[in-house]
Image (cartoon, rainbow, N blue to C red; front, side, top):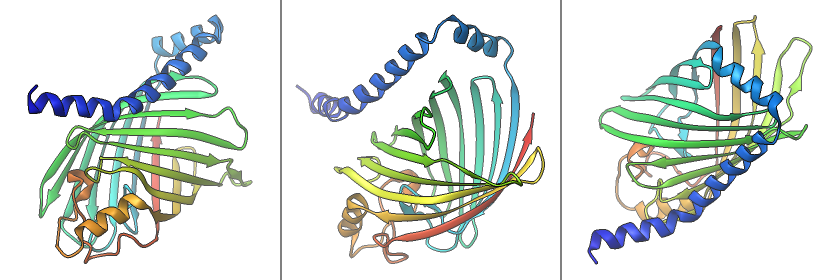
Length: 287
């Protein structure tokens, strides 16, 4: 048996459990959707026959560029512009981010497909290209799966899975979004918590806890088409980030872990410390 065959078999065994869980969840959701009867089937069919078209444009900034539980930049935050076009169950999107204090530009572009949409369940699959331009150039293609359940009055639960074609690793996030507090003027406050797991997505030869994140999201509609929204978030690094930092201590490495998933410059920031960051955005909706 060749070395390549051994690596292939080992890779399949390590990630078979993740694939089985995600595939099982999708199968359960599809079975529940089928059992809801012909009425829901006719309603879903009408959506495909007469798809609604929507366009969203979002622009704003974050005080830090936190991704995968890590501060991706040596200094400053990031400004984002995001465009999204939705046609029925298909969602095409593209975004570009620019560092406020350093030469860093990131471009993301992709497409998502809603496999299932009911009153309680939603299943989405997607593919995204990510490119980084600046002092260094990197790129990656990521496959994503998202499952959410809204059958409870007080919270919405979801699981988000991302697979990197570059590192052949997985990143999983389990989230709970609390019930929104709605004010008379239409403003809302929504708490959330997220537990993230790294399966060789960021750190080689590591599988386990990555970080815990919690925060509150706010939205304030100015009119039917324009909304101001923001967030205040707190991140607690866990074993994955601490393991990465300890293995990199004593040598300088690339900060651009968003794509190459290899290293962060520990001299620029203490990645093992808790982080608080915030963001504010404007959203324009065009039906």
